[in-house]
Length: 285
Image (cartoon, rainbow, N blue to C red; front, side, top):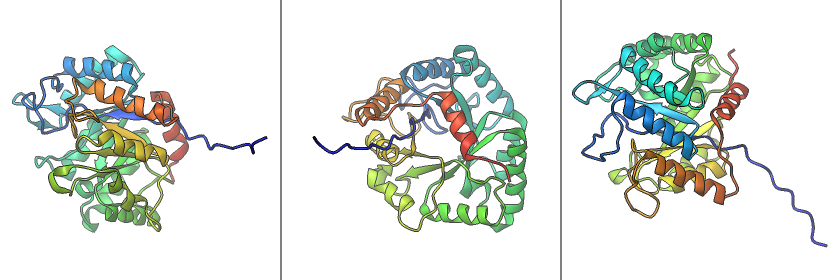
């Protein structure tokens, strides 16, 4: 009789969709959602395809990236009217060259969303910004707003870990997003771009997510999932399916990722699974 094999079961993988970003327009893809109604329809389709989280950008009347509480409220209401609480809605604080740290933090204070993404290099670019960043994270902890810290380079992971050690981050752990390939030629990511973030001696975060640029997006996030991470896909960073064909819409990218995860023996998480994972991993100090 063959020896019994014990398999370690990985947690369900949360798929987040980033459907538009702050730069692309319908010239890049006609299905890129801009208006509140378009975003609500996209959110519903991505939920059906397997998404657990919707990463939200809004635009002004000229289609430019916007950080505005009223615009966020309109989109959030439209999405909730379609999907209820079955998606986590995360707003972005991305600067896109238009905003500074005070404005980025102010929009979160005004909106009080369920979750918000925060680029460490934008919100706390140097030591002079750390006290304000600490106060902001304390506000988020008090309001039960889940932060996700965006890390573009392994050096930022080291800096975040040091800030946690020094008590600037008021959580035992904090969710992070590893962005693969931002500094590669033409921003075309490869699964190997994840290796510097998880190398020996690098800090380990209880909840990490991976996003990537270009047609290897599914391969990159699948590699992260096999290592215990979660996946972010969508038109913000990639317009193509794994075989190089243009994706019809964001839901097709989510479905492609869900299919790849199932082929690897992984299940995809629901929004409530994601909320529970965050709650387990994060406790305010």
